[in-house]
Image 1 (cartoon, rainbow over the protein chains, first blue to last red):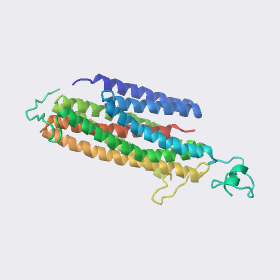
Image 2 (cartoon, chains in turn cyan, green):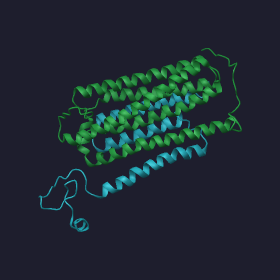
Image 3 (spheres, rainbow over the protein chains, first blue to last red):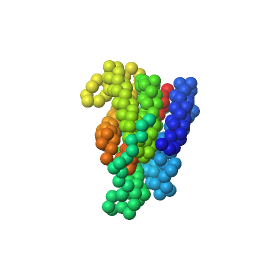
Length: 118
Length: 220
């Protein structure tokens, strides 16, 4: 059997990164810890894609197809979130009185948006 | 380690291909396109989760603390270990080592079954805690905003449930490969079949990495 060393090393690296990610979750909190966990997830996924799914030895056309799936997913998430980031959804800590115009989430609309959405 | 010599190897490609290299490339391309459609299936759910995670960050982070981080971590380590044995099974099959291929496949299946067992234990624990808002079951959340926390648990059960379905399908396919390995009729073909199933199995692992991170690790 050839090329056994690479997947075994990748497995070891995976466990180390997983341990670091879980430790960071326990030791830290808030945005920094979450960002670190997401970076660790990207590293773990890359290890699997590269060593267990054969992208390391794949030809360029196959790599393009693999990356195309990730690209479509990125487009879907980013374009969807652009909508939600640009308008008020979720928590409304400074809720106004009932007579103020609100959107579906119960958040007050500013004057410009209220004019657009009578 | 015993090497079983192949006496029935058929190195010829299927009739629609010029050679085995072309056939293997076509196999790989088809499998990756299939995995891309699977990515879209899970991606839609992850996108929905991202929207609500952005909308209710505090509630979702608090709800995540009700999941068992130790069991989630154990399952993540188990799944990547099964992916390692799957990769080793592929190499053993390509080296035409029947017994080793069989052992690696059985270890992969065993770890997969343990994974599903732990997941089932987790679900049962959440059921006893009344944190299972599905099938009309009572949902009693001890924290603030139970309606928003219910949304978190809905995503949790959809994602982990869909993942478990994919695991079960993978285990079924691996069981078929065990039968093929026992027969050992066409080792080169078996090697290609194990490679395709290995891609699927590793993809399920990639999906779990993001399920584990978004549901278990992004906590308060």
